Image (cartoon, rainbow, N blue to C red):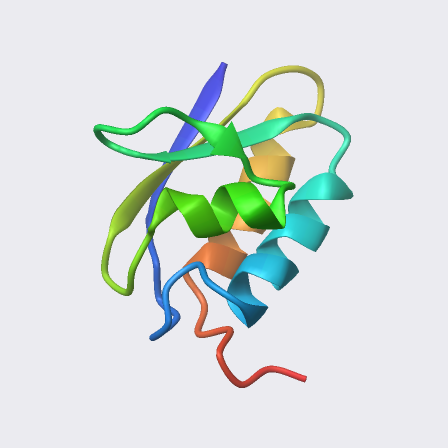
Length: 90
């Protein structure tokens, strides 16, 4: 199992557009990726609803986890998205 900690950079947190972009990218990975805040139950990163119910706000640290072949690369890609300001991307 691989783990990455990352700080949410979007001003709206993982809600609306940023959640949709992260979920789409996570769902396209070859491994299942989960995301959680420290004291919460993990949700699937590929689920828009899961991301929105997580309640991750701007500046919150989240933990991404995945296992299996390609997990490290998948986590790196999703971590980069979460750490980016996705509020105004096209």
